[in-house]
Image (cartoon, rainbow, N blue to C red; front, side):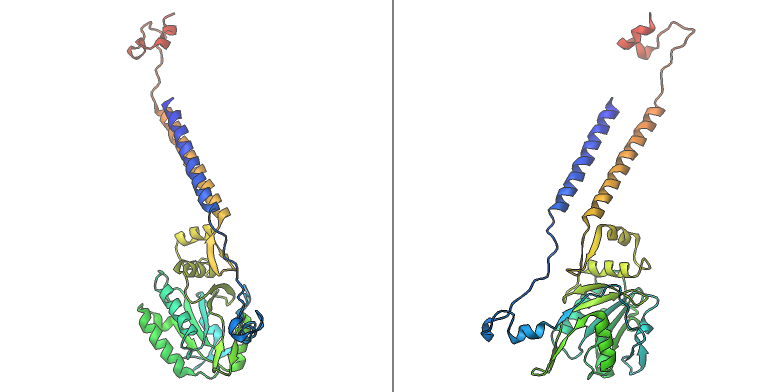
Length: 317
């Protein structure tokens, strides 16, 4: 009887905590949707009709998930050597950043954001994945690329960075082919001699297909880690990462990994079944191993353990 009471209490606790998990998940806010900003005021024009709005209308990152990258396209590396984009694929996933090396603001923040996030995860550039930055300004050459590589390889402070970080430049045809395949739309502003562009990095599979986009200038270490593990098709990461991918899924609208409610409920249900099944097995084994009192048919003597038990009276009749 005591065992069954313990079982009922345990089942009630499991169900209670499962309900708590479901309530917490249900209380999570929905992923943020893309917002549209209107520009007016200073230009004294209707919202969406200002010069800035007209310019930014053609600036965006369009997701081309699972699209192939132009691996045969030729660029130049930091040493001025002609290389194929595909030279950095084949074995490991690749983080691709389209930037302008002379950009004093946004592009530098994109590179710094990746550096900060990459230093916070156990996966290492060169050992587990490759990082490839490509300038979308055809006027930039290997000298600027070499300066960028020297700086970021030194600041990264992990072995193998020099072999895993690559900063490329190329002609306009090569740049256009790569930016089109990625969905990276940008505009040159002649008045300021700068480029208007969006910010983000792209994760690609070892086979050279686009897997994930991470937007902005700061990237969550967990998003970068899960994105790399998923892009590698299980080649890198730990079993813990594989379990996390069951509970988190990539949201193309936000470029982030969010809690997968269905996966979490499946995991909680599986845990509940395993816990209750394990408890039942333990209880049945304990009951089986308990000694049983058997009356000796040749003797009228009642065992001492039953003498004070009212149920033993049937043995006397």
